[in-house]
Amino acid sequence: MFVFHSATPTIASESADSASSWIEKMRQMDEEKRKAAARVCIFFNIYLKLNPSFLFSKAKLLEQMDEEFGVSNIIHEESQKQKQKV
Image (cartoon, rainbow, N blue to C red):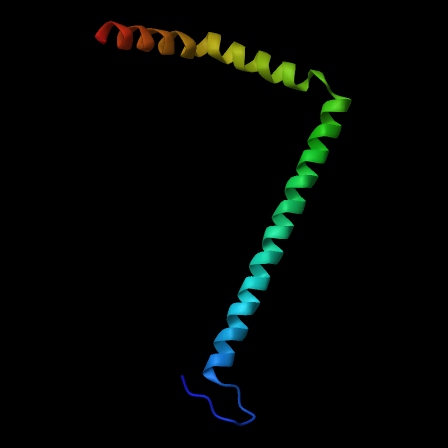
């Protein structure tokens, strides 16, 4: 590392500046992610208050899909096979 006493920036100060600016950018990005997650939670809570049957309808849709494709039957059969092996 070369440090000269002049008006030109040194290698050490340039790397420190870039590191500190990178850290600041990362902190800002984390803060923006946190704020976005909070907005999503608020929106979802408001949506659920306005449409409380939303979760029920999603659960009902999943049940219908399960009946159509038989995923729970496959899982049950596989678990029975695993128990028989043991």
